[in-house]
Image (tube, rainbow, N blue to C red; front, side, top):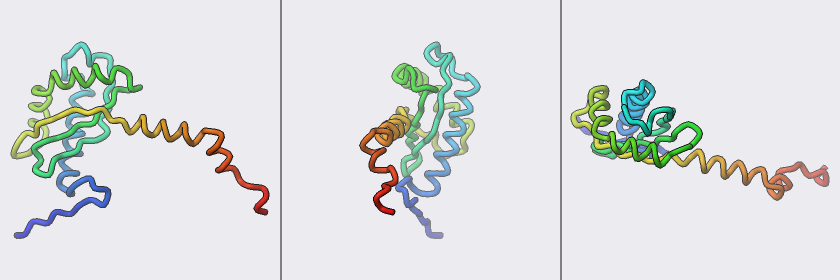
Amino acid sequence: MPRHHHKNSAGGGSQRQLRVGETVRHALAEILAHGNVHDPDLEGHIITVPEVKMSPDLKLATIYVMPLGGHDADVVIAALNRNKRFLRGEVAHRVNLKFAPEIRFRIDDRFDEAERIEKLLRTPAVQRDLAPDSDDE
């Protein structure tokens, strides 16, 4: 039976990569939400997991995280990396894959980019360009 690799138009990978990434994301979000990781640097932080990107062979999961409010991002990443082995094992128990993927953590900077765009849209020059022109009537 031939294998078909359908690429997502946004460049996010095959349907299988997207599906597995979403499954890993849910598993990790549940682990973090329930406080299963006992690390003093993670206590008191609510961590969102907006995206997980899987490599084509599904052996590497790049996990994008953001602590609520964006505070202590470097501390949170360091703590997650210290607990990487435990987290990989927990993900392996929850996600049915042939191999437990290696995991790496990255800060999700899409929030910062969105904020930067918002600020640009509020500048006087952009507001002037967006204002309806009364001369066109």
